[in-house]
Amino acid sequence: MKVFVKTLKGTHFNIEVKPEDAVADVKKNIETVQGADVYPAAQQMLIYKGKVLKDDTTLAENSVTENSFIVIMLTTRIRVHLVRVQLLQLLLQIKLLRQVVCQQLQHQLLLHLLQCQLWLHLPLNLLLLHRVLLCE
Image 1 (spheres, helix red, strand yellow):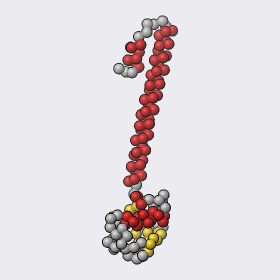
Image 2 (cartoon, one colour):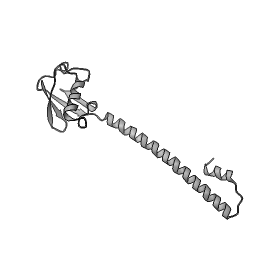
Image 3 (cartoon, helix red, strand yellow):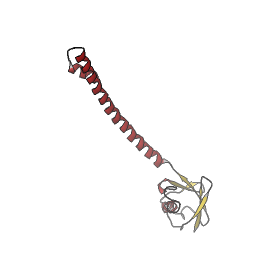
Image 4 (cartoon, one colour):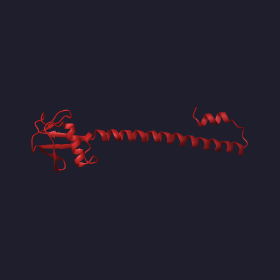
């Protein structure tokens, strides 16, 4: 049977389905026909007569018939999760870079202080310098 799928952008397309098709299979069908980059099955939400269709139900169980209109929406749950993962990775990279930069600056400062001590003919107290630099 032919079913029309309306998008929130106002466009529509039709797909061939069977009444015994599960909603999850219909989503995969839409993904195949329209493209995974446009309508990934995992992000689809199908609505018929104001009711969100559950993946484990069939079209017949939801009273979807020939020439019915189903509204399709994309959820952002997966996108939000991916963005969170990317942000956590970036924060970890920043933390590691900060540690490396701090260590490099500490070493440079230690060398500079040692040079100043030598230049000023001051007694060397490496343990004290090391504690000051590491804020111990």
